[in-house]
Amino acid sequence: MREIDVKRITEKVRDLCIEANTDLGEDVLRALDEAMEKEESALGIEILKELKENARIAKDEKVPLCQDTGFGVVFIELGQDVHLVGGSLKEAIFEGVRQGYRDGYLRKSICHPFTRVNTGDNTPAILHTEIVPGETIKITVAPKGGGSENMSRVTMLAPSEGVDGIKRFIVQRVKESGSNPCPPTIVGIGIGGTFEQAAFLAKRSLLRPLGSKNSDPELERLESEILTTINKLGIGPQGLGGRTTSLAVHILMMPCHIASLPLAVNIQCHAQRHKEVVI
Ligand code: SF4
Image (cartoon, rainbow, N blue to C red; front, side):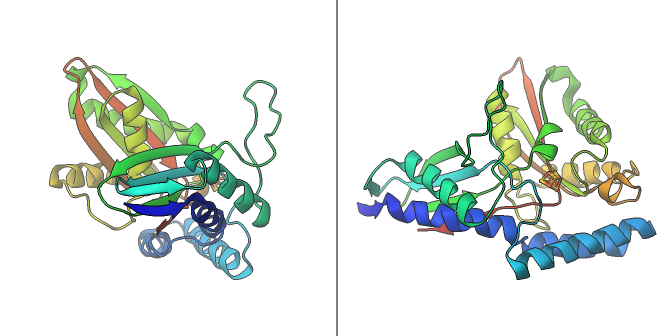
C-alpha cells in the first residue's frame, strides 16, 4: 500500500488548471495545420491561422487561450493500492482548483443557478473518480467552456432508430449549434449505458488525442463518416463558412438496456483544453 498526501494532489491540480488554460495541446495545433491544408474558404484559413497565433501568444505570455476559462472538470484514476493521507480527496481537488484559478488569473465562471451569484473561486469542480488497479493516481484537468457545453445534448433514442438515427441526431445537433460553440469543434459522442453514463462517455471521449484512431474499427468508420457529413454543412471556422466545422468526432460506446438507445453529444470548442499527470 503506497501512501500519498493529498497536499500533492492540490499542487498538481493547481498547476494543471493553469497549464490547461494557457497551453493548447500539440495534437490540436497539428489538427489546425491539417485543417488549413484542406480548407477552401480564404476567410476560414485566416481564422485557423489566428487560432494558432492565439495559442502561441497564450503559451508565450502565460495568459488564457480564451476569456471563458471553464468549469473545472477533473478525472481521477485512483489506484486501489493507494492510501490517501492528510485530508479529503475532494477538498484537496477543490483547493487545487481554487489556487489554480486564483494564481493563474483565470476567470471564475461558476455561479448559483437561480441567483447567478458567483461562487468566487471557480468551485465546486466536477469530479469523475474511477478506482483502477495499481498504486498511482492519474489526474486529468479538462476545463470546459460554457458556449460549447450549452450546445451539448443527451437523448434517449428508440432502439429501432439504430445507427441511422444516431447519425441523424449528431449531425442535426452540430447543424443547429452553428457558430455558438466556436467552431472548429471536436464532437464527443457517448452511445449506450444509461442516461448519465452516455453523457459521461461523451465527455470522456474528448480526452482522446486528436489524430488517434478509435480502438474499435466499426466506431472508427462511423467517426470518419459522421465527420465527413459534418464538414459538408458549410458552417466553417467560427461559423463564417468553410469546410472545417469539426476537427474530429470521437465515440465511446458500451452496452445498453434492451429497451433503450442512450446517446449523448458533448460539443467541445477549438479551445480543447486538458492536461494530465500521474503521481
Ligand atoms: S466555446 Fe470555447 S472558445 Fe468559445 S468562448 Fe467558450 S471556451 Fe472560449
